[in-house]
Length: 191
Image 1: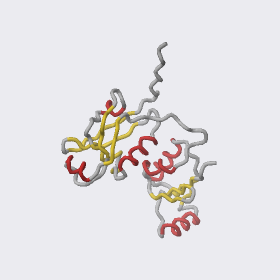
Image 2: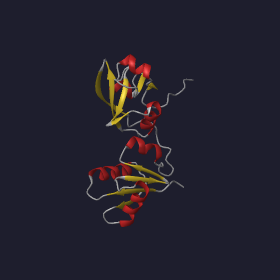
Image 3: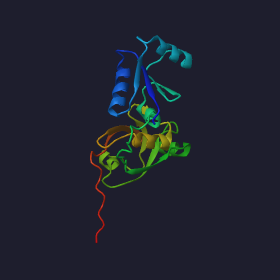
Image 4: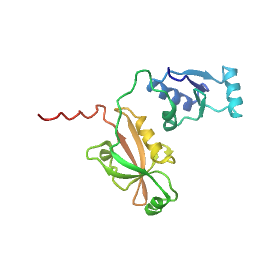
């Protein structure tokens, strides 16, 4: 049995609407509690947070405030029976340390440095090169290093895209990674 997901929202709020759409697209069963029409929803948030802030996601006993798809993907239950087709970025990455940041001219240690990039992979097609530093996924700065990056990729499904920002030659570039809708066919052994 998967954990119950409850979403605290305010009707008419665009961020709340985007959060609900995200859950629906991912097939995550959830209960919606509107703080404008459900006084106990406001009381729960006030009691747990000391303020009423939406959207907020209660997953089991955990309460996540704000709509951050990367963070949510770590804690949301997968729909029943979904092991799901997985996607591959197609490049090795490692967490940026202070030394790596200094070598690339970054102001602080954040992001992941790209290592070998597999030929024909989504990373290659997007224009990612070895030595690039991926500093952000969408609007979110990559402060959690390799673990956060892998979580973000694992939250994607075939056919999804992922906006990334790379640091290359002391400048930021925005790239779009497109994961193929059809996974690569398994090579058949020759007899």
